[in-house]
Picture (cartoon, helix red, strand yellow):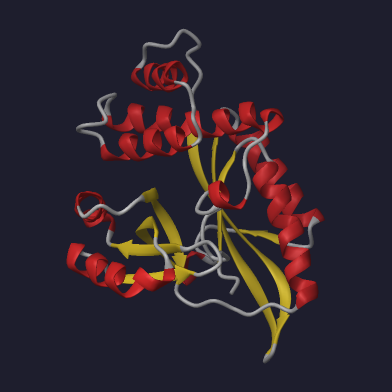
Length: 248
């Protein structure tokens, strides 16, 4: 579903083949390391770490890989490599019904070499017809919120939406093609809302902190094809963890 992170529905759209599995595990390990470094290695007391571990488990990441990533973050690793979490901004010019417009992009990355990563992300954007812009140029078009994805059949959508509101949700969106209800909460109540929905018996496919667009723009078929090509190249980059956009 456009506007959501790269990870939101990938599990439902396609499986991960063996050739991509190592790259995916590397991408999943870095947020675990960063979360462990920031808040300690216990997921019971470090919610950000728990979210990162839960995401890794969705893709069957081996326990030893998870433990190694935690150890790296808490200082027990032997390599001593510093991993930084970065947020870049960009846009892709396009046309809308009312005239020229832009697809706004928030790109989250984690890297051991900031100079290399920023150079390569800039190159991907430029070659794809986009522009790399300073911090604050497009982020005002997004709100950072908690996002919980639930598996919900359409006939049970109304009940699920009511349950989400009772659990603390501020808004919901339904992806009918994937049968996924996206539940949005303030970051401060993401954990309690997730726990409440889990206790109510809902199948939670992901829970994370995301950049949600305040409005979405409609793209022509040509512009959508161009954007999807750019999005694929960004997501294929080893250091890019997630891409958020305002494409409708």
